[in-house]
Length: 375
Image (cartoon, rainbow, N blue to C red; front, top):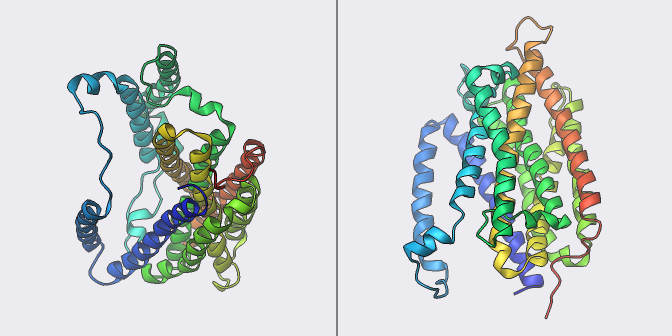
């Protein structure tokens, strides 16, 4: 039902993501320090089996629908649009991953997986990558033209262009693209800062994220309880401004400072925007679209969020590695040289959050309050 119950439901969904991330992060640090990171995959497999069993018991049965036939499967799904979109995202993801290649380091830590030292913008110039990137770029307008044609003919369209005609939805999608990219890049590079610059252990690094995760959990719940009392644009703009302080503090930080002087406050602020935006965006979607479009709009929103993560990390990884490579420090793997690259990514994150705020001011100026109870 709409109203406060639904608001709190969405907020707890977001809070569950934060709680899961917190448990996984700390558990990952413990495993790396003890039995090794591979055990984590076995634990994940077991958790998924338990989740599958719980889902079959907890989730309500779906409403009875018309039986699916091969004919409906053929005509009611935009297969061409799905192939174009999948090909485009797949090619872009491959190229972004390739240009931000990672190499493990000698120490046993989370940075064994994450340390960025070989990514380079010159990788894009390689014939294969240039070709794939060009094909992906051509597929983007091709997809727009295709789904536009499908809509005009009254046929199924994977992502109808009409979705983007609603300013509030377009705004929250752009905001989540930027916000998720910055938030996940912060997690990525701050973990490297702790381990590669301050030379902390994996467990010590993971524990330093806990304050932000506690704030994120509480903030999700509070947003669900209060979102119907405050205009959506105020909520997302205020949270974005606060979140911008996180990369700003890391950009100005001295590695020799105490954790409590700047890094702690950065960890408290970094999840603010994404956590508020998740609840507000979910409510915007159910408010501005009819019930039959909720699933499609929600799927598009989540796809944009995931793509924002990949895009943000890839861009910042290339920037960090290039800055480190051009550093005047002769030892390119020294903490000082690595910090030069990381510091630039934090400045980029600060700029990204300011841009997110601008999008919110423009796109959500007429959104008003969301999550209100309607008869």
